[in-house]
Image (cartoon, rainbow, N blue to C red; front, side, top):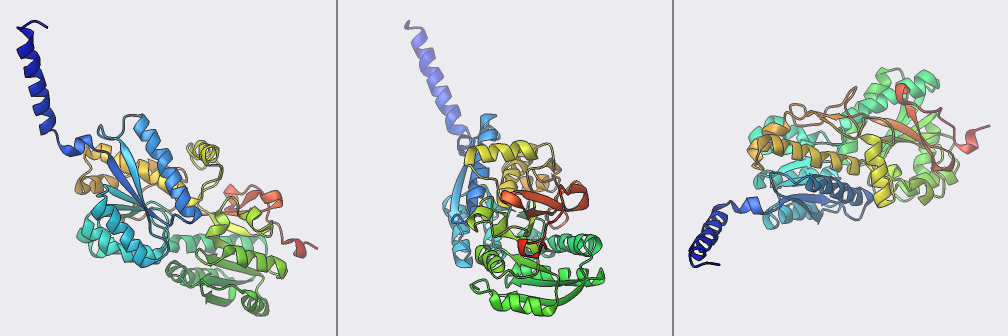
Length: 406
């Protein structure tokens, strides 16, 4: 290099260094997505796997605002204290830009004040209690950070179950008496009164409605009460109690009453084999399945199965959509600052895996035609899941339990 060029080169290095030093530190750092979830459960594993899928897609296109995305996971278990610790770890220690996750309504409700204090956007993908988003309306300034991407809340789920009871069970099958049993959890407490009233208003008798403890391991007294009630169908609502034990005992006792409803662990792709086929004829509410719900459903489903060897449960579907919903809002805001991103999130009109995603005035995902809904699929021969309701989505008839088929 000539003596004339050396000073210019040195000056260039100095200028470049000065420019780098004046660039905001955040522009050189990844955007952090915190995942508070129950990592020991399938819902938690699918939350992580779906987030990885979505983040890899976004990063392959250059990331967001010139920054890569990365995930940080914290195990919230199913315990409120652990849930609070997970939020504190992600917001205070890891300083994540957004939180995506959740599963247990009681845990999420305990976390809300800490999310608000941290002023960090939270996109729920697991818990269903309407109380989670209710504070957005009563105290917007403090709780504007809270959104629910999925599932549809317990009230909407109850109304979908009412439609199943009055449309399918009573309307098509002529069943007049339905028993309702559910685990004693917040989201079920929110759901059952709406469900019972809707069934009765629709002309279906409900001779029994009862809660059971989530630690229950012997369901035979409950099955005896259902049988004695004269019910012709048993609606069961559980997420944290043991679905495996419940279904096995129903099958082994050959309870002469079909079962169906919202059984979250029975949504697992391996549930049928896990209970040795004893779930045959159980009908389960699903938030998504491998069907053309939107143009994105089947491609996402097949890629997820290819990569992770199992079909996604609802938290996986919700997480994948939540990452993309957040990314789109950040792009429109041209910022990760919560105030700017919240304004854009409120305008969301995004075609997701289970339906179009839009938020209502309390930041809850909307439900209805073209939006997110509840499908009812029955476990049938060889572990096939056949959608049986709503009528327009049905792929086959409901079958009775084997011991009731004669």
